[in-house]
Image 1 (cartoon, helix red, strand yellow):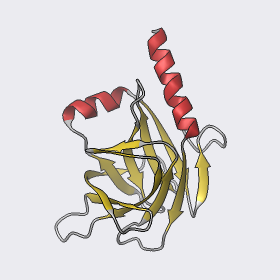
Image 2: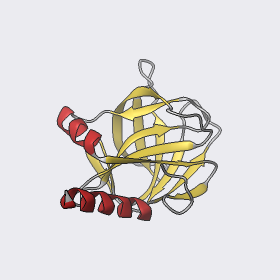
Image 3: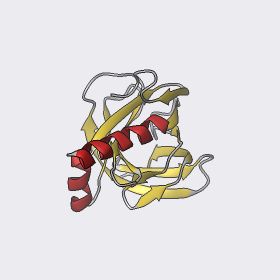
Length: 159
């Protein structure tokens, strides 16, 4: 029981140090969103070090369920991630990212991403063992729009 509380507290401390910038852009076609992580985060198949990234919906005639993650200026592709559509649990106009706060020093995992003003977002698809593990981790959602810096725990933006 103590270890579980310690892990949860450690996860929230990591989340409290996580800052990301959510810059909404007018291009709803590819849903380009600039995000800055102050700590490493996991996406399916890859750990992204702290830094600045662009999340975009991949150009595909057959599917809108691929998200590409690029470096800050969009010139280097880091990951292409399979997603499934998911509806927002509550209405918000801002971009939102939900993270699973991982125990034992593992980087937090990106679970969902929603573009501002769009009710259907992207749930990242992890392997079954990872998915089972992630559902047991504490989750926190960060919301911001139009370049506002979001710092969880200090302004009530997280939940």
